Length: 235
Ligand code: SF4
Image (cartoon, rainbow, N blue to C red; front, side, top):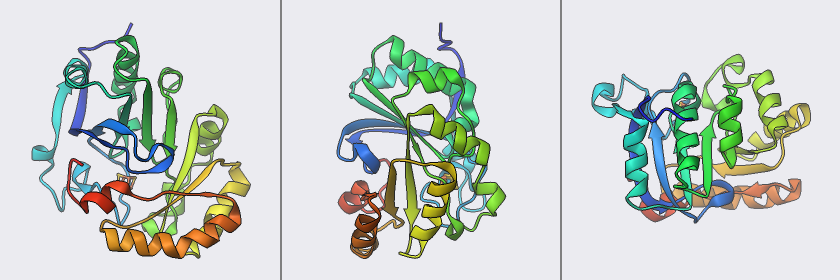
């Protein structure tokens, strides 16, 4: 039985909109963006979730009950709910209650969690979600290797069988780094997504990456929300 009175720290809820990235690109979806991240990627596109040097985090955070999120989802059900961040798995207890409650009330057919691949989900979370969109960070994130690559977590998520591996890429040279991770940890399927928060950059990088990604037999993701709405928040 899930605890809907459980509190969860949210940055924003938004939608309906389209899932903008990865295998579900273009799907009608609602998003729950959780507050907090233990990493600090230099190109982070959701720094408002955790970066106190650039944002007033007290203004950005809301502590709410899981029940209130369910009420919001129930106002306009979408087949897909995406739980993103920040790093959602920092709040594993609350997330477990949220995803179990969404299942109990049949508020979504599919639930995706977007994660950096540095925290192992609990079995309760793993059984309730449809997919983990896992984005291990590459060297251009500016993070130290031990911060961004957690071997036991990658192996656990790979063994779970619900993960797709969505790598944020700036240049063709980044693909070799992905290949090494794929070889060591057996990460499949691979999705390559251009880094960029404006449509011109996303398109330029997709064009640069398309043929090299095809040659490796990987998938290419756009950032549909960026192509449509640039860097508008809540879209
Ligand atoms: S893991 Fe995600 S939310 Fe955290 S700093 Fe990196 S890009 Fe931002």
